[in-house]
Length: 240
Length: 240
DNA sequence: GGATGTGAAGTAGTTCACAGCC
DNA sequence: GGCTGTGAACTACTTCACATCC
Image: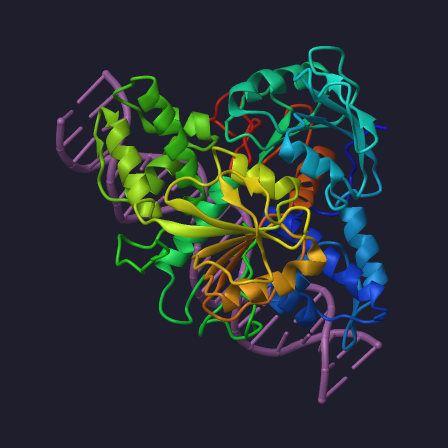
């Protein structure tokens, strides 16, 4: 566990493509669950809130996997996306801070999936340390840290930098930071930020500045309005 | 409350700019709190994980507000960003689903800020309805819904579409959806998705495919490696 | 001197349009 | 006929480089 090695895989995928592939994957899996045996780029695009062309471009980056005239086979698509995103590689995750957010994450059946393995939980609150959450006993963060590849920070902003330092010293290579606080890490360590307040601000900006009655949100991912020929008439999706 | 009207404001800001302005704002506010009277684009960029040029371009979209040779005045910057993002306009927010995530959001001092006003809380669990959270008594979602501009969905995926329909029927114009589920809404309604699992997958993709020993994450927002001349030596920031 | 603001260049991503194959 | 895969065009965003002003 925890071995995430660099793989010489298909061509490098673009940032927008990487963020869309998990969405396609969920769509495709729901079709598999419904017993569908075919899906085409228009259908995926409609559900994901992007154009069919974008879907085809994204999928073309994974190699040739469709059939001209007949679309894609869902099971092949799902496995190829999983491979591209590295879901076959298992890696350890530690979660720091078990307030409501930390609890929500570890108890969710939708968070630690696709290769992620919960290694340990940490907090510094004596009322929390020692309790069991999601099958793990919460340990004191000031003690030894289990080896893991990714650390999830659910601590207050004021504790974010020190917590990150501690994780990096313990060998963590990637940090998912839910604290609204920029943190510094050594070169070679990746940080990805999730900031709820910013997401809400982005949404309201569009609400305030939406153009006209049906113009609405115009977004790199998810479009609605007269200038969007191929889109579903009713879905104004926007993924960040 | 709840009146979010379209304003004829400065030129339309680009999507990446919109997502960076809240970050700049937090940086600038922390400088104000520390009593600083000047800040320049290089300093903001270093803390935000972007180049100084990008910062200047973003800020130029808000009008001329710096002083050549001397940088920006933090208080002016903060108020202009607030204005551009519409923080002077107050709007109502309802939260649906008060599991751990919903509780984490409404109890956070960093979520409902910048014009957002919590209007009401809803759930359908009889054990939750009637309890008080963050100063509001949780109401039954199957009853009448308070007028609000934005709805925050913290419900299970299976309930997401029905909940969204209910919110839209009640007049909600924007939905922040934390359920990993695509939802359909009428034209004119905006949906913004936040999916924790996808954020984790993006992080691990970069971990798996990082190029070389110090190459690491290369991202539209936050760069590290040899090809990044101006960046801080130690911050590999990546906002989505 | 020093940092802003911005044309110009460069790069990345999306969309068009259609050839190719089933 | 239908849908994929992709060159070409287009659009969006970033970065360079420097004129401009304090």
